[in-house]
Length: 461
Image (cartoon, rainbow, N blue to C red; front, side):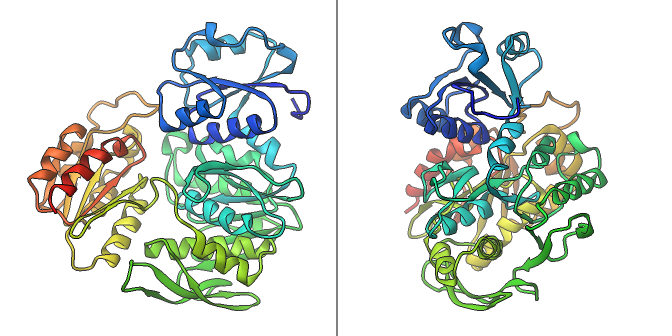
């Protein structure tokens, strides 16, 4: 299938995934019939059902709409599905187009000027910040996001008819981003990750260099200064960004407000300085993310005033430095960080905001393979906490690996204030501890105990 023009029906296998649900919303908004399967009911699947999408939770081919014409139907699947999935097997045997999510995303985005945000960390925040800025420019934008924006209350932003721009998170998992041919691209970082897919870091770098080679000739690449990437692989214009050090785009004198814990800074661009940018969202790491988003927006034609307004308007993404509770003496932040470098960045940002407060982190490792590959690095990052709580590994798409558990990280930590408990025992543990700042960390379902944690913190007033 080379285009989507003749498609009237779209079926999603794994519709509740963050990327899949954004595509489902896109097709629903364009007038297609949309339905799909997911393993578990979530807030996202509830939202899709409220928007008129038929979602079911049993792997059963009887739920696949029989009235749909196969020649007018597209099935979209996620690589996270097991090979023996009944519905997936059914589609493989039928004369119905069956495509991976990443392929379909590329087909949509490559028809417009795609703004692709890549890198092993920061993609969701930067792409959402970029969409927040560009949305209120004259042309507006569309967006496929890797998280639920608090500004849009969605992970999808439908592009206005006259807008040439569409922002997309360029995911390196399963080499998905190689389906994109962006006009503007940004690379945040190149840490080793997804070694179950790539094998070693050299293959990750090779994949990113292939990605940047696909940028349109009249486009631009923005790279975080210091990232180990051979930019000669692209013929596009290359610019750099950084938090504080000299680069084409960087923050000048970021200052932490004494009220609210937010930052103000001046922004250096190739055209001069945008003075007095003000964030309403906490974390020094997010100043760096704002510089990246501003760089992409600048290259997409946003004015200095539009960039400033978008940065100030940004309210965050659910599960990204997400302040879930703020009491007089207790604060609770939830974050999706699941790689050692991400943990370090979040923990240091929290400690910079609250330098004299005790920080307790609850970490749920994501994937057995990632735990195996980075146990020492996870231990070093968690040692930055005043108190660390580990819960069992969230397996996601993996089967258990013998000898690999959260205890592997715990044993390598030097922090004496460390605990290993079941996820549902975290609230009980916290009730007996002296807490001030609490963070939940991980890409699994650790946020499912957020209400329990909030109840405990409220009881400590």
